[in-house]
Image (cartoon, rainbow, N blue to C red; front, top):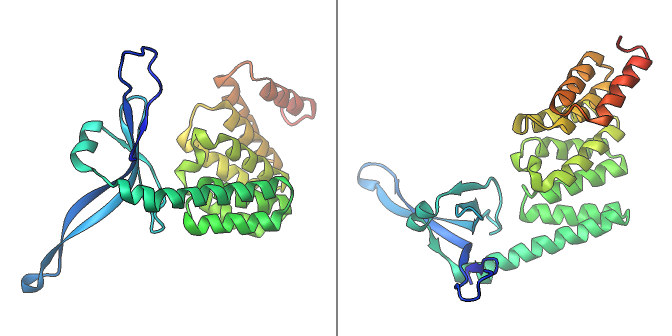
Length: 258
């Protein structure tokens, strides 16, 4: 099947609508060579697509291992139906098994990490990244594994990957995002923490918790002016933000600010 049934309709007499979900392809006519040697060829690309609640279609390209990877984008249903062709057999026989394999590998890695088995976790996260090097859960998991093990150099390599991935800072990954930032601070990687949270701010300007976390990272660097600047921004977004108010009171009590 290349479609999935939408939520049940409360009226039993109304037929259920099916939402678009599965693998689709697009084709582009390409010209190769020049002059008398020029020839035309069709380039076929594969995409994982699913219909959102508002009716738009979210598409994500498949990578060389045939799993959805990289940035997602949304297009209108009209545009989608005009340009995309369903590939149900390819989805069932190739893509879905690969997606299941990836999901199971990450689940094994996360179980190992939760049990403190960092080397087994590292092995499984790396296996997942062989399938999808941009997988957010696998990158965060591997980074957290290194941070929990105190391996700062390897953690820095993962950090460099994560700050370049917009998807790392999306709402669905908020839990991992927060955990990673906390662990950067615990390892006294304050410069990385500042860069990490500033990267998130580029995508989300009005999050008081981000400003608070940046303030804490700057405090580790002893940049009090920056600490105050971000605490003020946090409190301007949420005047009742207790942690930010307590931080300001602490700075005053210790004589950092008047």
